[in-house]
Image (cartoon, rainbow, N blue to C red; front, side, top):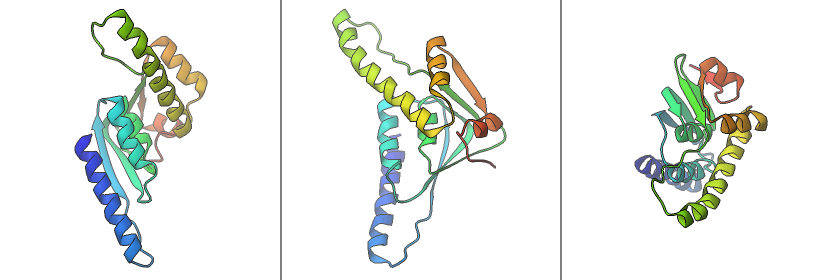
Length: 161
């Protein structure tokens, strides 16, 4: 995510500078192609926090699979596209904290609760998935696989290419 984050920041800043200098400057969309099984929630939020306020449109494209944290990055796109055989996967947040002392677990739980709340609210805001559906996924500990036609129905994707 790091290289992608800095690359997008550079493109946005370049557009911002051109916008200041050129009258009626038109920003071309940044095309972000995603094929990923996911990753760190902190890296995910870092990229999303750069994408959402961008004046330069950022179009996201699912190529193959976009799962877990990568799905949330995909959802931050201004317009979202996939292909016929694209697959998305949503699941509850996962923590790989390994063996820890009891107090470390207690203190870490508050952070995990906050991250999980943010994640679930983001998905509800950016899709047609309901709060009840998100709660069911979490409670049943399910990985939910969503294919292109369903992705349009759930408001994950704007268009199948």
